[in-house]
Length: 131
Image (cartoon, rainbow, N blue to C red; front, side):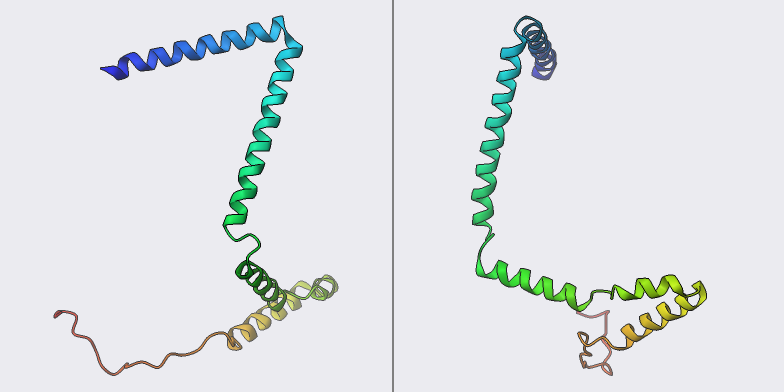
């Protein structure tokens, strides 16, 4: 029952606010624009302060964050594509480019040093019907 009353009341208040904004815009434009500018600047300062405080709390300059950024940089450098291959690729024919790219992908798949096999008990089969 309260929902039937609150919805029209909300629309009525929003309509009054819109009428007030339009009237103020046409009667006193300069002070209206100054008030909007001050409000936006105040909100930007508050948001900047809050962002600065929370970025400090989340470890923005902590030792762990520095180590993470360093590791991310090293990882990007390690797996980065060479830039000279693009200049060579422009000179080659498309058929040779495809064969070179596929051979590079095959090499990468074979030489994955970050992967290792985990030995397990493969001969023993589980009886999934029992617990």
